[in-house]
Length: 602
Image (tube, rainbow, N blue to C red; front, top):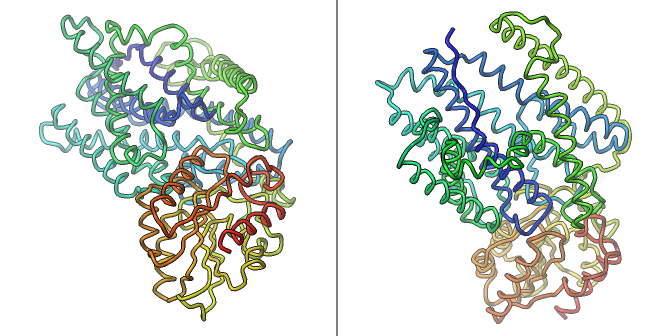
């Protein structure tokens, strides 16, 4: 059987290196990589390009796309290293923190089936906002997106070639770009400004455009056309590669993850820029290709899969109770980085490479075709058995952990525990997109629009409810876990329509993420100029704190009926007022919070 000619493109290892470095820097919280989450987008484009290039080259050389062989190769490439990582985490948590293992049991099982992203969406787990213990496998959502693409794309590509009349490269590219456009439109349509963007960030439907854009580049410019000197065309290739690299680096170093434009075209710009870099890097004769073939970058890029797999577990499990985002000491992060690279290097040399090359399979040398066949069959057995054992081990460990009180159980904040303790539980849920948690409203039916105080907030408001009711008799409190400011507009509208909105309205929101001035003004307009409005600013150990407080302060200056309550200034430096997450309040903090509001309202 004719064999495809898949050449090694060292420049693409440099692209991988930049992408994985960006992601790690973002998770370390380095300001220089504020947009480092876009590194995942670069990986998507690269995967789309390479997979499509491989499939089309196989069809050109052999006259067909061998689905079974393709899926086996992908499994051998991706699954064993992930199983090893999951096994290590399972053993570690089973010995050191069984309660935490119980918490992530569902995530473990979804990781094994490459459905992590949809599991996180279903559970409304935020990528951006987390106040409880972080999951050490929260980063596997991106691998799930890619694996889902690997499963479906070969069939779609075959269908396009089979059923499109006279399927030229142009027609294939148009259909592929149409699919990318549909995914982009889905992201723009589902994204709600001022709210947590996790749904559109995780979704296969809203992130597939990066993979499709990479595929379109492979259809237009297959790597085989870049394998030989391009003459004068190399100048054009260098120019577009340089432009793409500059745009990619600029976005990685400057983009804010909550910027509305990122989800309404920004990621498309990043994907196109990454595609330009990939095409230029695929040529060994381009300056960009030579630059990204620099040996240290190649070394990192070759091991980028393992580095990506291990970086988040190491960060999360080695971090203090504050969480990895607050462990910003350089030497501490350097130790983590060394461990990440060391584990990935050992995994690559002694596990991934021997498995893929067949050296782990003990058989005598035979003719190459039989060797490859045996290698694949043994590879399937090598993958299937550990997968089954992994599932059994995880289920058994989680069942055992479930019989004990979890050390880090994540329980929803309820009205009951807030009233009993004056604060929320130390183990609060990870704030999620709007709609999670139960509202804790105490709205009396006889409240009139002409008097009284109404307070609208999130889980922090839930925690201080009892104290506020002591100091401000008759106050109407509507607090809900994980509430976003955009949700408050509907709450206020309902209260107002039922004539239950007090003459003084306290707004405590911003704990769960930033919002735009436009959205805040919309809320203020809904409340009305005839009300006195009190905006409580935030003290949260997250990067949106200053943005939220600035927006609130500006609104207080612009509206005569609005006053700022400066909780940030009062609580700064008083760590004993807060629970372990640095956000929710201990009884002493809840008392101070309620007193500040009561004194300000008068």
